[in-house]
Every structure is written in structure tokens, then in C-alpha cells.
Length: 261
Image (cartoon, rainbow, N blue to C red; front, top):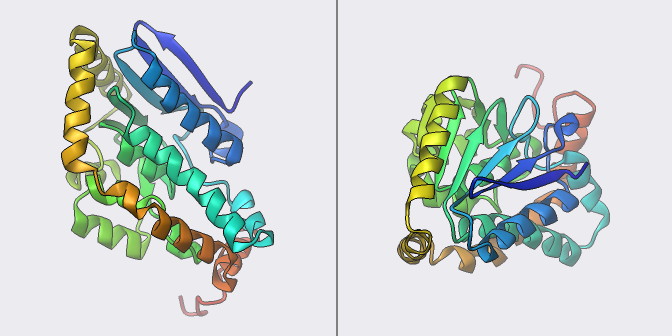
């Protein structure tokens, strides 16, 4: 079974993250498939919206840390090229011509918050936990930052990115990362109502409206690709980044955390 499963159901193009044994953490294969799915949606004139969700007990744990750690063996240029593919995934989602509705449950960690940010409408289970966890690992929320800051309240994003605080669905909603929060039944009812509205709208009118909105809201994001991909690439190969990743796998505090902490 593919790590990303796509299907069309009643004019809705569904994109399911399907690596539940790894908490849907994305690796190069998954990044490529998600990117291709968003690009494919643009050519499917019969669909009304994209529905993005994850299989298993959480939406997505972010980037696969085994993959991130292995990048120390790559040159900086190779790391940058790899990071650009991650940026391209988020950008493909952001610029998808039809509305993107996302459902988030369990955990939305690290890079997965970028997928939440590119959704036009985000719906989350009320027990979902979010975290910009990168700085705890000696990394930086670099590639996702333009996408998150374009949607989320700046002051709250600033706090959460710098502190790696674990925050809940209600905080995510109040800081504009999400639009709706509820229990399982509430979420599914909300999602179906949203998708039905898109089904009833003029498909080309919706596409043109979204294109117009993005010209005002997101025109500068692509200019940040070079800087953001360079930052995460440098953090991956840095001694601090590698120590943070090693400490995660070895289930110990990183060496910059004192005993009293």
C-alpha cells in the first residue's frame, strides 16, 4: 500500500497520509507523492476541493527523524536540494487551485504544522496536540515558517516556534492556525458541510477566487525559498542538530540541557 493514498469521492479529491506505523512522518517518498497529489488536483477540472487527512492515531509527526539524521552524510548543496523538495510540497499545497480542507487529530508535530498552515480550512479534534518541536532537537522551523506565518497570528507563532511549547486545538484555533475544533462527530459533520458547500459552488469561480486571494496574501512566500531551505540544511549538518537528533533516538536529554532541567 502506498504511503500516500489518493481517491475521488463525490467530486472531492482525498489525500490520505498512509504511514501510520511511523505516525505518518514524511520521508522523501512521501514528500514527492504529496507534492504530486496537489499538482494533480490542479488538472482535475471535475473536482470541487481537496480533503487532506492522516491514517492511524495521529495526523502526522512531522519529518521522519531517521531521514533527517542521515542527511549529515550529504553535502550542504545536497541538503539544500533535498530541503527545496520539502518547500515545494508546502508550496504545491498552498497554491493548489481548489480549496484544501484538512482534518487534524492526535499529534501535528514539526513540519506537519506546515501542512496545517497550507490548508484553506483546518478542522481539528479537540484533543489534538500541536508543536513546533524543532528547536528542542537543535533544528529550526525554517521551511515551514513562511507558510505558518502567513496564516497564524505572528505573536503566538513567535512564542510557539521559539519555545517549542506543546499547545492544543483551542490555542491553535485562537491563533488562526485552525478554523474549527470539536469532537469526532462535530469534526466530521463540519467537514461534510464544508465539502458540500464547495460541491454546490461554481468550480471555476472558486478557482478564480482562490487565485485572486493568493495574489494578495501569499505573493512573497516563494521569494523565501532560498533562505529557509539554507537554514534547515545548515541545522541538519550542525553538531547541535546532530546531537539533538541523536539524543531523541537514545531517549536522553541533549547535551545542552543541564541536570537541573
